[in-house]
Length: 298
Image (cartoon, rainbow, N blue to C red; front, side):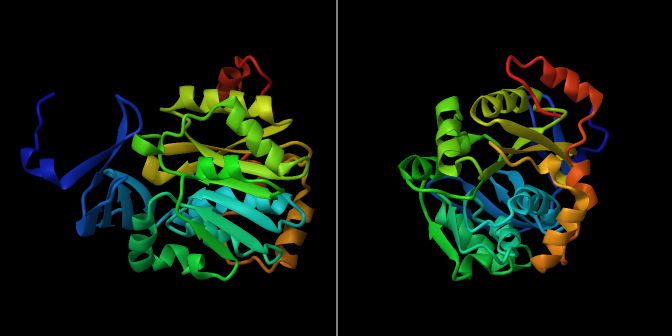
């Protein structure tokens, strides 16, 4: 197809979700850029999403909707747990996930494993609206290391494990396997919870299906979660998994009680109704996921 607007060619950028599909946004002013040993980092003033972090050209965190991602990744598992005291975030160098999790006053220790110190340094200076200086909290232990290796070496018990990494491109494709998820399950025990984001429901279904299948072999309860993500062009799939605790079994009244008791009221998106709505799966996805050789939970 002929480009009818050649003068606009350099004003747009595409964030690819598959080999054939992506989200196109108008480019903004680059405030700072840096190439670390792991990846290429940029802070950009996007005319659509506000101040944003780009990793290898991929928009990973934006001022306008970071809360939509982080609130739903963090609070559904954290509220499902009646007394979360110790948690780990793999990735999360922008501090947005940590900011949400630290709202839970029972939390005593949060370890954030970010492989690239440049992410922390750059976002600490430019994206304070997102992280609110969460990584400087006395409860946070910041580890600059490969998060998967960190978990493999870890002993003891943890209440919550989160994976907050970018799309599986470059060094951040962690090659998840069943043994790794079983190691996470062992650290969490019967009462802990695991959460991660999987990808686009429209454009990355094979990856989502594969990861849900693995998780369902390591955990007794696996709850897919769907949230709208404007910067990713549609519905985004997350998951909460555990052995005994099930976020779907938590009554709305109890969710509200826990939010009130923990003093969590400054949220943009997550609430008791959203908690359950996120786990409502459309029929089309149910049929596709039902083809898995291991059971899916709806």
